[in-house]
Structure formats: C-alpha cells, structure tokens
Amino acid sequence: MYKATLSKDYMGCKAGDTILLERANAGHVLVMQKPLEFAEADPSQAHGEGGHLIVRPGGIGDLVHLGASIREVAKKSGRKVDVAVAERYTCVVKHNPNVRKVIHYPTTADVFDQYEVIHWLEDSVEEEVELHMADAFLEHCGFDHTQYEPTEKSPELYLPKSIKPKPKPKRRRVGFQLKASAKCRTPDPALMAKVMEIYFQEGWDVWIFGAPGEVTTDEKAITNTTQWDKPPSILESASYMQTCDLFIAPDSGLLHIAGALKIPSVGLYGPFPADLRVRYSPYCVAVEAKAPCAPCFWHGRGSHFPPGCPGAKAGKCIVTAAIQPETIVRAGELAMQKKFDR
Image (cartoon, one colour):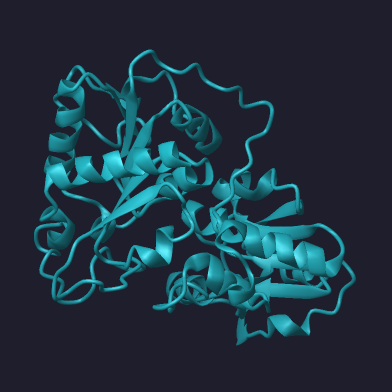
C-alpha cells in the first residue's frame, strides 16, 4: 500500500488530498503526475475505532467472490463490515447483509485512519496461481480457507427489492457476454457468433449482454442490448440474466454473477485455469482451452496481452479461438443438467 499527496485531481480525489493506493494505481499516479508526497504505508497500523474495513478495488468478479470473507470478518468482529471498492462497482456489495457501508476507492488517508483493522487485499489474486479467488481472499483476511465447505464460498450477489423480477420468456433463453475487460480473455467474436446461430436455429431466444454499442451483430433475429433504450445497470443486467436458462461468457463479471444467481453457465477459459475462478459456482461448466502458452495468468494491467503473446498482433487470444462451437453447446447441456439433477 502507498500513500500519495496528489498534485492534481485523480479518480474523484482532489489535488492536495493524501490518499492510499494499491501498487498498480500508485504507479499510475507516479506516471501521470508528480505527487507532492509519496511513500509506502502499512495497513496494519490502523488505530481508529471504526471497526473493520475490507479494501478490494477489483472488478465485478472479484467482488462477488468476496462474500465469504465479508461474512467471516463480520462474524469475527461482531459487527457489520465496511468495504472500499471502485465507485462504479458499489452496487455489487452495497446490499450484502453483512456490509454496513461502502466507501469509494481511492479515498483520503484520514478516512482509513478511522478504522480499527484494515484488510488490504492488494495482489491477493493478481499474483495467485494456486488458490481460487474466494480462498485467496479468506487467507488474506486471516482465515484458513480449508475450514469452509464449498457452499460457504460460493459467489454472492444481493439484489434490492427495487430491482423487480423480469418476466420469463415462453421460449428458452440463452444469454451471452462477448467481451471481457481484457482482450486476452475475450473470445473470438466469430466463434461466439457461430454458437449464437446454433441456439437461434434451435428456437432459443438469444440475448447479448453488455453496454449498448459495445457489441454488434449482423443477425437481426438476435436481440442485442444495443436495441435497449438505455444501458442497463449491473443489477438490472443481473435481473435480466435471471430470465435466462443458460448463460455463456468468458472469464468476466457477468459470468461470476451467473454463478451467484445459480444460473447454469458455460465459462470460456485459456489465460487462467478455470478451477481458480468457477470452482464454487455449482452450475458452471468450464471449457478450458489448452496450449503451450496457456495458462499465462495475464490480468491485462497495462496491456491486453503478455509480452511475446502470439495473439497480440491479431488482437485476440489464439487459445480460446481454437474452441469449437459444438464443445460450447455440449457444455451448456451439461450445465443445465447439473441444475436439473439437484
């Protein structure tokens, strides 16, 4: 963890503010501006009386797998936990019954000084090559992950009452998320188009999830989010996902939301071992591509592809591009059968 006094405005904080940052963002501050002060800081030196704070400035997938740690920290401390996350992902943890308050990351050092204990989850996943995300978070919060049942470590997402359930369609519906946050985890669009066409020809209602304009298709029969009047929020997307009989996606935020909502799903993997991501999602079947360069464990920080990646020039992962459409369809059948069997 690093402490920086800003010389310019940064991520919602004002010039002159002293903020605490994880390593990657601290490096960004050093590059983008000459901070007035910059030094390493020790999160274990918290001395306030405001209880426990968990800091995880990751994306949607990180936060839905944080549920077990939030629950156990709350149980151990005897009161609800505060969580610091990136502002755009506040809703992912806001409605967790074990969360008292969500603060925005980054924030000023004096806010952090209010807490008795800070669980700073910097690099708890980024450098992990053996543990599932939920297990890594538990370990970094001081718990032995082997002492918990798999069901206790399932991904979690809580929808508020204001998000009304959407009506189920008469036809079977399959949802797709085509893009991940990094190109190395984004499947070849041509592959996904072939899979969508298979389901459409079989009479399924096919939906593409994502920001309007993010994904386009020439298939007019496929309902795309680009046709919606306004972008759905994360929680609205989750509510629409509950109308799906099956969800297909790369290693992405909505795939982990599908796991939290117990929706049968297919996860497409290559850069990361699937077991480190979907082990505790009971109805997810992973299609894991194999190649000498995989897994590369590349998170996409700084660049979409690791140095020397053979797919960088093409702008897509050649490992996941080799997956066959029929393999994905068979995985979907297995995922739905898993839920039927339970």
